Image 1: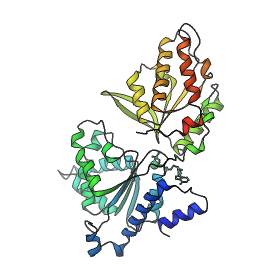
Image 2: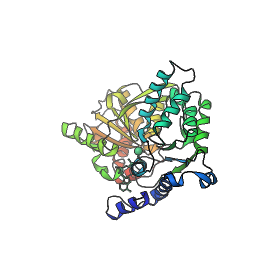
Image 3: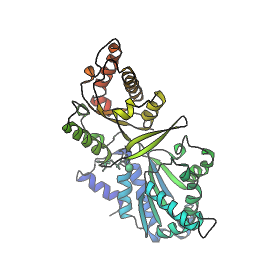
Image 4: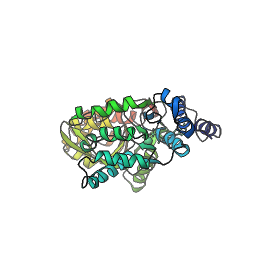
Length: 361
Ligand SMILES: Nc1ncnc2c1ncn2[C@@H]1O[C@H](COP(=O)(O)OP(=O)(O)OP(=O)(O)O)[C@@H](O)[C@H]1O
Ligand SMILES: [Mg+2]
């Protein structure tokens, strides 16, 4: 069964919800699947369609978290009539590439060409999930690597949270990365999957996202929320570049970042750090918000600043806390400043806040 029919059948049985935003991507993947069939792959028609090496154009699917990019790419991959084919997380792929480059450098001065040729041999179809370029070591090689793989006839399909032009956005030596952006835009069909529905969000209840008090049961509930929002993924540490400094995000996955109160508020972070977090993640998990004592002026200030920043950015917050919002601040002359924070924390537990369509970058 073709991809389009497969998706239609899943919608009929209720396994998937009909989603107009996904339809275009299903159609694009469906046509690519057709084009990969050996009979349609060569000759006059292929040349007419502007193909090089008889290979059809690949796809670059981008959009905010939870829209179904990976799900659709995987359905496509399973049925795609290409052999050999390979589906791998972009991170893992680049690790593999660096290891092979390292080995190839022993025998060749130009390691990229032989490594790209070897990969192209192992995969006529290469599906890469979650393309993201933050590392200068990756940024400096992807251009030539992808150019060589495409030239060898490998069809590349990839998912990403960012359009090609936003990749490696604030990276060092970005001008050396731009040929890669142009290559992707020229050689792959770039398609947005930016429907209104974040399917992971449907699995949680907004009023259960601010959990009090600090008990093992609530810690387990927060973990459960994390798993629902990340499809059970264990996060990985991430590094955000903040004005040339490195901010370590202890755990991140699928647009969610997790910090403890100590890491986020007791550590001497400032406005640019909180802004970077709010800009890079759609949901922030904070564990162990304590009762803040009257003399903990810095903690209180930073917490107010964090909540204001999240609020302005439309970021979602999931947390475990010793106290309800109004009782977090222990009193004293500055307590009045906390009233707005408490009220914002309440609003951020509403269904409309969680369902809000925010700009996810
Ligand atoms: N049309 C749909 N009906 C029901 N569930 C869906 C639909 N589309 C996607 N899902 C489910 O929603 C979840 C999120 O989808 P998926 O992992 O593909 O999102 P994504 O766009 O790749 O997100 P991310 O950018 O975070 O990787 C998955 O569990 C998926 O099976
Ligand atoms: Mg995905």
